[in-house]
Amino acid sequence: MKFSTILTGGLTLCLAIGAQAATLDDVKNRGMVSCGVSTGLAGFSQKDENGMWSGLDVDVCRAVAAAVLGDDTKVQYKPLTAKERFTALQSGEIDLLSRNTTWTHTRDTSLGLNFAGVNYYDGQGFMVSKKIGVTTALELDGAAVCIQAGTTSELNLADYFRENKLSYTAITFDTADQTRAGFESGRCDVLTSDQSQLYAIRIGLKNPADALVLPEVISKEPLGPVVRQGDDEWFNITRWSLMAMVEAEFLAVDSSNVDNAMKNGSPSQKRLLGSEGDAGDKLGLDANWAYNIVKLVGNYGESFERNVGMDSPLKIARGQNAQWNNGGLMYSAPIR
Ligand SMILES: N[C@@H](CCC(=O)N[C@@H](CS)C(=O)NCC(=O)O)C(=O)O
Image (cartoon, helix red, strand yellow):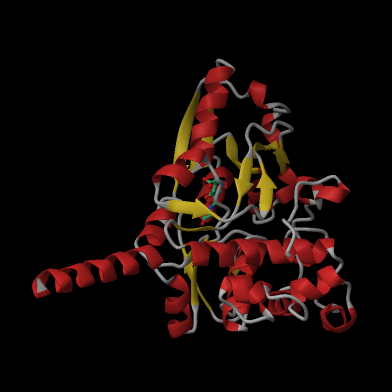
């Protein structure tokens, strides 16, 4: 009897631990968020010569650290290739994957992972050297294609060429740098990846003006942060850290006016920033979780312009990544 009570007690404890999978506690104890990023992709996640990471995806890591630890610099960045990224998350090596990763049905349902939102709406495209004289992807029959292993780009390429009855040879690489080098050295006629990454790779070419991005966009690539399945608290924190950036832009709160908005803002601004309501408490965080995000990282629009938009070398227009009331798809659920 006693034994079975102990056994039941033990079992209950195990189940409780399994169900909680408390990433938040781990992160607080460590004092750091472990964030999986790319091996180097301009505008999204890239390390500079001083070892500082920046980019739109890096800002999601920073936002989560700001929300949880009140300090956006408390992030350990783990560079991962496309092939390595999901295993690193499944095994617990990272708390969060924020690495231009497309939300697909297979990844969401069969890897033990959950996508927490979309921080960039993308689509796959093609880049060629101008000297081959190709102006549409339909002229690519028989082409050698530089591509990165373990990506949706590989799968979409196969679909597109099959659908259009074209043949190709895939030349596969592990990192963006290698893919760019393969393209530059003429190992392939065309490089394919998400369009944003084409622009990022193009600015790394010796002569960016020699390369042409073709007009076709052959897929939908909603890119966003990913967490392990089974930890709803951490999922909520990640999802709402991203939402807070998007909502802050919608509510016209940015890093320069956030202090004033917290004191004198509208009810929605005050609820976001924690001077009214208990949004932080419901996430298991301090009241100023979103204030810290906006103050330290900025709103989504600030992050976009600084990293990939007009204030960056990539000069990507907002397009689908504009706010919903400005013709785009960026839309935060209300914080109330
Ligand atoms: N969004 C696609 C593609 C992601 C991807 O890894 N693209 C390459 C394009 S070359 C990249 O960004 N590589 C960065 C790296 O090598 O770390 C996916 O989730 O599968």
